[in-house]
Length: 313
Image (cartoon, rainbow, N blue to C red; front, side, top):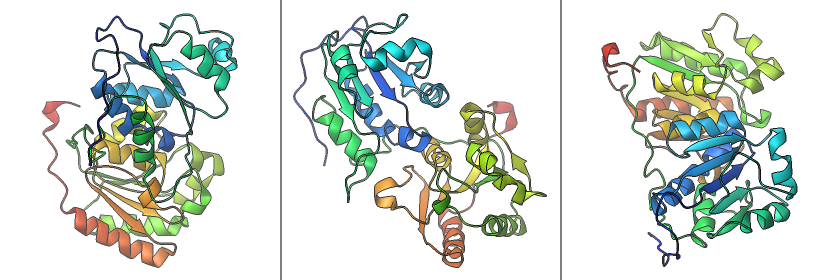
């Protein structure tokens, strides 16, 4: 059901203070806030949205129009902000803010000293069963800001137009309990290549590099994106993505890439990847998961025909 609130008194022109968005967490947790931020953007179309947090992650949000600008929350200039002693130089004072941060009362007090709109402190990983985390974020913001929460939280997500026939597999995640053994992912790659997907490759992220898991995939086509921007470039060119419950999968889902996402130890009803063409597979055993992945590939259907290379990236 769509929810509305009575409008708050506010300036409607772009000269009003920006809305600050503060988030220092993991990539997947960050992307799960995007449906709420898109709701907030629709409610305040004339306001600038400035993110403060992990710059590499925030730049993704700028790329997709979730934010207008990003500032490095891990820089020395932000020490005063997070201690509650002073606003950072170089940023316009906030007109309102949403901060996904624990124990931030001093920070909130500082922000409220200049903000005419609400300043919210929200748990970056809320503990609430039975409701998807993205909707929890929407409802939390909706209690203070005049937003409309759509029934379909993918409203406003970008459309996907693949530019190649690449299929990408991400065999890792930030939690080892979410992953299967390398053989599981190699069997998926073998199936794909045997069924016409010769351009199947493995995305290797920081977690796989840190743990050395990528060494198990020697002989495979491996891709090492240098940052999340490069990761998004690779995903943009894919016709199919297969991965675990991870930040990479959340990004693929948001971008509209047809995706099969495996949940070994997490509940997709609460933490699941959101997207217009996402097929979840819930299984704690490799055999059941492999069968589910094949069913997911079949359910997604034939890959969309890529647009001609001359159309550009």
